[in-house]
Length: 226
Image 1: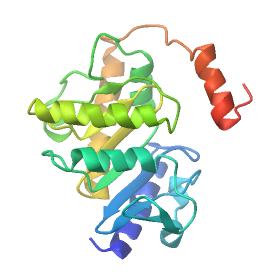
Image 2: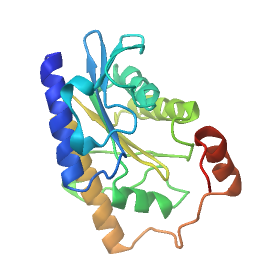
Image 3: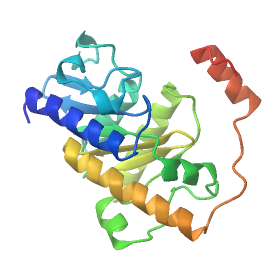
């Protein structure tokens, strides 16, 4: 895929995800690994209104060279690209969303389970696979990126490379060889979460709110007015 084709695909996939409700407002981001760097959606961009020329272009070291300011999640995406490279599921595209049913599952997940969802359907097993549930960290926290990289390495070493992780309270990060393939994996993952919620099994209630310490961190990091 050329850079021009990658730019067009990011915009097409972003619009599709937005129009079908997988993302809302300015939530979510999409990146592609190029031969000599990365493309990623700009910070606070609406995925339903992306323009190819406005995408952030970064070099191989992650330094921005053109486009609008890159999403802060590029650090996490780069760790996914690096950690997955030597596994059976290397990433060429990473998609992050705040998909409703997945976040709902996260809010009510059993903390004793390492993975977010059980193997409910054959297509979930075949198309998605295991999805580690990563403990909550504020958006953009470097600890989250390291936890994701560790989960990728741990599952690869056990013989079942992964294509997705779920960041507690935030949403999934899904990767594949192209934006279209990553989107298809996300769709299957969100549909499985919807089925799990409809079944009402394996969930704890009620959903617990963020702690005061977690809210204070958001005040300090993002000037949240809560």
